Length: 202
Image 1: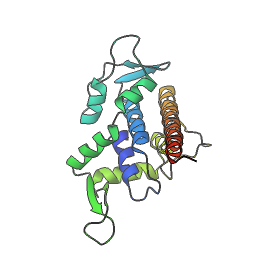
Image 2: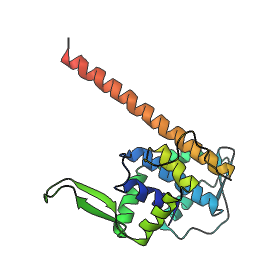
Image 3: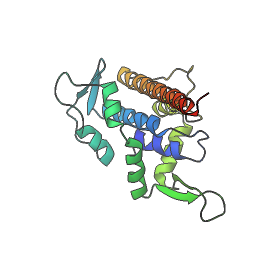
Image 4: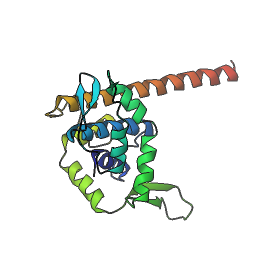
């Protein structure tokens, strides 16, 4: 399993008390993929740019797609640009893949057969590995979870404990991107409220 898969399973877990925004999660998944590519030697970070490495293509299908999508022409892609490009609808991509693999199951809330349907992790070895990593407060997983607001992630005042400067850069970039997305949401809400008030009149 990859960090992105683990993060998605943790985000979908019934134990996660807070609802995670799909846009936020998509950005964090892209960051998780990049961190795994760095760990595998498939990419490095030079300043704020992603430099592709010479390592073999990852076995994981989604991570392999991420590796294939790396820009291989100088001056290379900035980390933030990668997050926005790779992160587009990435949460939906992971959900579809994990459902196909039997890692996710659909359940209806309440006792009625027509109650609201929800998706949650199935009881599989992959889910248990993700849960173990979560219980151990693995620094990267905890930090990315905290960025998207998953309850139980690292608190903002806690040191992340990363040994790799590149990982620190990626996590910081995910945080900045999520904050930017939230600012866009707030601006749209204000604009929509103003438009609604205009139509209602005095």
